[in-house]
Length: 404
Image 1 (cartoon, helix red, strand yellow):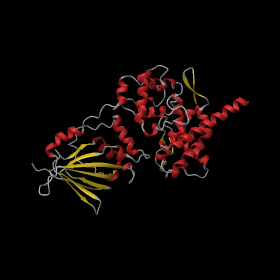
Image 2: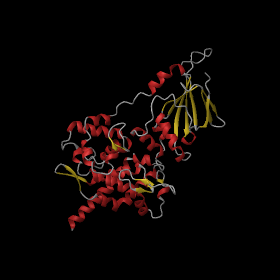
Image 3: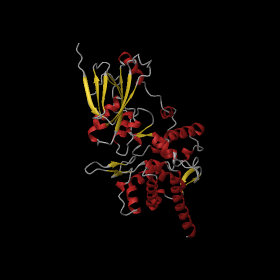
């Protein structure tokens, strides 16, 4: 039977060959298998890579697939090539043209040459490729040649299901009942997924990272700040699970203590997210919010962005490196009464009053750090200064009450 060769040529941004390590000496050739890595603009990924070699059906309704899609099309995200495993291809040969910055990949037998792993990623790229701009997203592509003899073993090894995540185990152990009970009547509740492959667009990890900002049992003053909510969300899951293992649903659990403020926390997040531009305009009347590094402005004629939880229309996306330090400052408004966290003052009113100062100071710090929202989100000085701003407003309000 004649097998037609499929030859695909496309532009790439970078190319690297990793030679087979079983090189014996200069007189003896390498063993047949070789490995290549390329980084490719999403717009240049070819649409006709053979898929008969991929052992999985691509179900884009799974939460994992939705996360890939959200990561790809989110205009605020520039890390797709780092966050996504990319595509794994088996091929007969690959040729790199350094003058044209292209590669030619040859597939000569679709039974063993084609996409081995990354089928969901590839299908999503094909579906949304036309909606992206050049330079917006990149993907890593790994190409293996000379692996025909071990193809079945390779496909099986690379497609092994990922280890069950901590949150999935926690869901089986019914540790999220605190969260579910508090948020069950909110409009975004059905979008929260508590374990892998559940449907939904909001990861419970995000819920826990935001609640961690208000854990005054762990972050009780001006010297300890929940920066980990921004920089290490896995630790926020661990903190929640450990608290539940220790105290269950008893009032000693800080997340049980949060019960009465949990909804307010997400309304506060929504208010900051949707009004950040307005606050900045009050801070600098002639400032262009859309020109700030990290802020994404809606393109003319494109649909409005939607806020994360309450799906309100937005013209701008504000990076988490700005949002999280500001939100974390509002734990200074909390105190304990009858075992539960309560607000000393309405947080929405405080945000409206000093929001311009908070967002302005945050953006100023980002500029000092090289116009880098990620550095701002990890900067302890910024977290401390914002905390002090909210604390001073609280103390000022209490003084006014006492003097009236």
